[in-house]
Length: 279
Image 1 (spheres, rainbow, N blue to C red):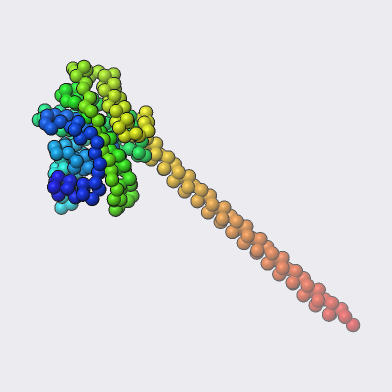
Image 2 (image 1 turned 90 degrees about the vertical axis):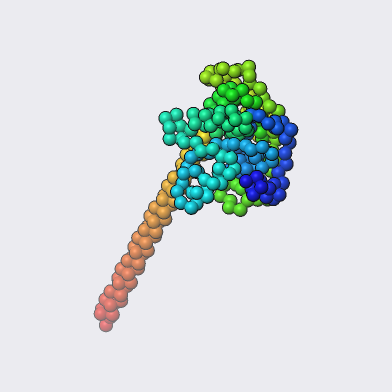
């Protein structure tokens, strides 16, 4: 996959990289990155010599049919691990176990602390569960990573990607051994996550938003829904107003025609009466 996808990807988009020397040549490490685009999981592994394993929802691997099998083969080829989100604890526990398994094999594990893609290009609050627990459970160093401009290559709704140079900045490894054995302390998990997010913010130059990206997406969805409903209500009100105006104009027209007809009738009767009374 590095040859068939990574090579052409680097040739076409020519991504620039800073801090490549911070990635260890061997041994376990966590790459904690901001998440701007679906393509982040392709550009980052493409510029590294080592394999990077990310996690992906199990639906990508279980969809039936030819297209489903091709999708599953593709995601396996680029190092994605399926995570079944139907369990009692959902994706969180499955992701943590998958990450620990990868790191215990001495490999690179990639994770997006925000939990989802940024809806507007800003950096959102990191979720404390996955990243911090995997780091503390394994003792693996955490490398903050900043993806630059990947959201501009293929914005939502665009089919054809834009040929431009994205960037990747890889920071120095962060050591959290001082918190070893404290992976169940929520305050420690929060502190570890916030430290990583701060380093990502410095590398990316993004504006930081102290709320979860999922919450912002809900707000944007609700706002879009409210706007759509308001637009629908406005159109309905306009249609009613136009209908009422049309009915009013029709009524006035009919009244005017009736008055005109009555006036003409009265004039004819008057003329008839005058002719009858003339000597």
